[in-house]
Length: 200
Image (tube, rainbow, N blue to C red; front, side):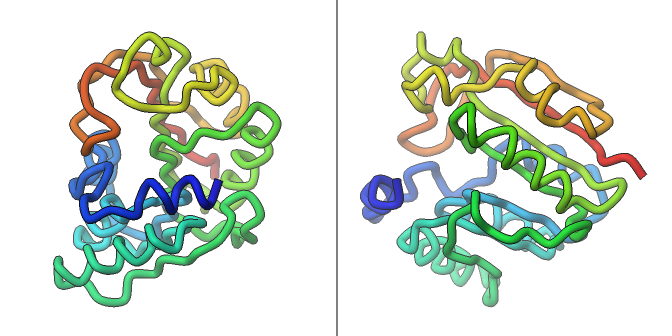
């Protein structure tokens, strides 16, 4: 998979654009900035926006090419020092009770990996911390706006409700949206969006 993503990112364009994910931007704009974790951050569009908005960002991805492009984007925005680490998001040692918010933006794992990974992230949230998720649903297979073609890697509201049962889920909805995120996320899309808060 590392080679797959390095190959995808190894071009001059930012394949998912340079602007932040709209759902993430909307949610983070409503709360006081703190420490933010972005696993699977890719080329840095969300990390750079969040840091500019006052968040202390930790970004992780196993693509070193993605990291290089993220740091270049940060420099162009006048933001040196972006904390972007190259590593496997599944095996990363997330510090417990550390982050005020964690965002999973189109991070798709198989059915065996997904719930274990999600539980690790819940542990990494501070009490009262916010979990933000946007992912494609199985209905995305009928559309051509991006996402994995393996149905076992697509998420439903029921999946997220089960995985994040320890959280107070304040919003969870499958819906159809329009994406405009570079060449690979463009057009009508079937997504699930979740907001959950860790109980104090």
